[in-house]
Amino acid sequence: QSALTQPASVSGSPGQSITISCTGTSGDVGGYNYVSWYKQHPGKAPKLMIYAVGDRPSGVSNRFSGSKSGNTASLTISGLRAEDEADYYCSSYTRFSTVVFGGGTKLTVL
Amino acid sequence: DVQLVESGGGLVQPGRSLRLSCAASGFTFDEYAMHWVRQAPGKGLEWVSGISWNSGSLSYADSVKGRFTMSRDNARDSVYLQMNSLRKEDTAVYYCARVRDSSLWYDGLDYWGQGTLVTVSS
Image (cartoon, rainbow over all chains, first blue to last red; front, top):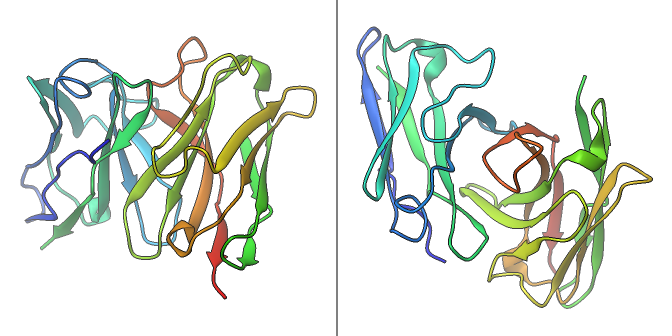
């Protein structure tokens, strides 16, 4: 099972919007609505930001949104803030009844 | 509050075994699927294994299949990861995590432990 494909890095200025893509196949991202996104600071446990493609857990800012088109899912962060700087990972359920993560994207707030 | 506490990590020689434990509290443990996710130093997240609430659905990543065994004891509110034939590439922080929706095997992991470091080295 190959990892989902994410850009290694993205950046944006405070107040701007950024989008992180996550590309898989019809056997994972494209075939199921079980795509989730995680935020992780170095040395810390990941935090769930988006589940079921576009739903937010309680307590997660509505500046975070998720979507999917075909085999590619996307995480959009609007009104970028300094505290958004972190690593972001997508994940998906797969047709093999396993879970696959993306390689991770480092978000830099300029 | 939901808490997940991993233990059992440490330094182990290649080819040897190690058993990780994850103690859960603050929720009805026997209603939720649980997963193990690892992160090698400086690398990304890698899913390792997942188990349904009743152990009826159990799955592994190809990288650990045949060497690792995940199990759970609902009476002890705990999950375990038995790791055999360890390799240097198994060196990582191992996290246990809870699935968000108790009716599903996976739809996202909403609670994570602090992680336990496994170092495989001679």
